Length: 239
Image (cartoon, rainbow, N blue to C red; front, side, top):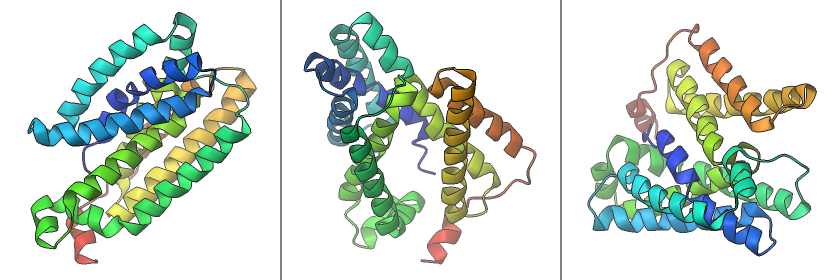
C-alpha cells in the first residue's frame, strides 16, 4: 500500500558489498548482507530529505552505487551465488539470527500497525496527530531491509524482490481491507516458500527459482477469484 514493493529488487542489491566483505573475512554472507542493507536503508532515509526526492528514487541511486561496489568486491562464482541464492544447510548462527529477525519484524508490524496505516492514508494527518513520521519511516525502512536480508540466502538479490512483490500484489487484488491483505500476503508467501522448497528438493532444482515460479503460479490462480478492495480508509475508521 506504500508502493514500496518494487523497491525490494533494487534495495536487495545493496547487500552485494556486505556479502563481498563477509566472504573476504570468512564469515556467513547473510551477516554481511544484512549489515550492508541496514546501512543502505539508513542512507536512503537521510538522502531522501537532503535530496527532496521520493524514497524509490533514492533507493535507485544507492542501488546503482552498491551494485558497482559489490561487483568489484565479489568474485565471479560468489557473485553468481549472491545473485541467485545458494542452498545447503544453514548454520546454527544463521538460524538463530533469522528467528530473532523474524520476531522483531512481526513485533514491529503489530505494535506500529495503527501508525503505519495512518501514514499510508496521509503523512500530514499523522503529523497532525503528533506522530514522529520520520522515526517511523526509519524503523520501517530498516525492517524492510531486514526482511530482504533474511531471504537472500536462498533467493539471492535477483529473486528476493519477487517474493516480496508477488504475494503482496496477489493479496491486494483479493483482499477487502488492509488486515486481510496482510494475512493473505503472509499466507501466500508461506505457501509459495514451503511448497516451492519441497518441489525443488524433489526435482533437485534451485530452491529460489522454484519458489518464485510457485508464487507466480499462485498469483495467476488468484486472478480467477473475486476482486477485493484494500481501501486504507476503512482501516483508519476502525482505529
